[in-house]
Image 1 (spheres, rainbow, N blue to C red):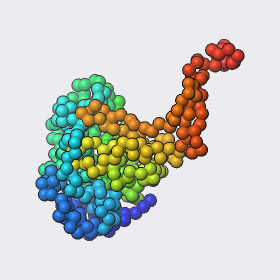
Image 2 (cartoon, rainbow, N blue to C red):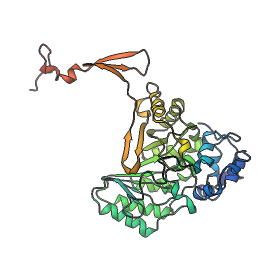
Image 3 (cartoon, rainbow, N blue to C red):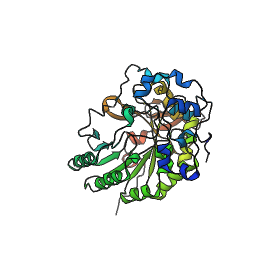
Image 4 (cartoon, rainbow, N blue to C red):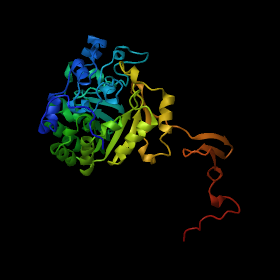
Length: 389
């Protein structure tokens, strides 16, 4: 595993560095601090103050330490440094493109699908990723639901039998107070018709110290549970992050990863393959590869669809199929995710289908006659399997 590439931005003992609470208390919260730690003098002068009030800066010392100082195009730096482009809203971009506010029946609940619901117990994150599709919640430091509001959210799920799957997300739900988090997950697990319970967190990436024994005990207690995390680049899979992932997997909690395809960060097949291989080696499955949502202030991260498809195409034949994430577009207006995967079908002539092989060597013929004309027993002169008995 790679080790962090930058120096620790703040002096800390080993015990402090390993303490997730210390990391949260000592997060860097101004563009001047982050730019100074990254040795990028003058960066802050390019960022408008009003932008920083709407989309403030925050990063844990741990995550900042992964960036290479002096490199503005470093994949970590691009994810945490505010850019002047964030103040430019492109056509079609809105603060809430997925219409989550409109699809919220009670505070903290978002219901886009008949059988699923999100519970967003807090908008707080220790690290503000500049591509975040919920960055509208950053102003003022984030908001956490009270116990009464969390119980109301659970009651909504309990009183809606059609909901079979709940995803607890954020913000980052692992920043909820430990007692409130335990109460929320425990009460959800008691809902008789709830078949699937999921937790989504970027803590293994930006704050792996958070995956401690207390948290693992809670997550074990509410199994079956799925854990979704959000690694974007191979350099994020440090020894500390790998340890956090192993502890989750060893606790019997399946972990899947959702990546956002970001211009200048991870928009090549080679970078996606490197990340996928690192995750698979730890027992983590690459799940989704998202095109960035049309969120106001994120246009500089957008990757054209054709390029995104080519990135995924370049992974085929180089890694096992379950290591290739599904490329998806989350449709505006809360209309759901749709997959957009590359096609290797090049042409067809009746029942003759010609495919491009991901291994090279030109086109390959596949005949679908049997599929179109019934099974072997229905065709004269072709022996089928013996009849039973």
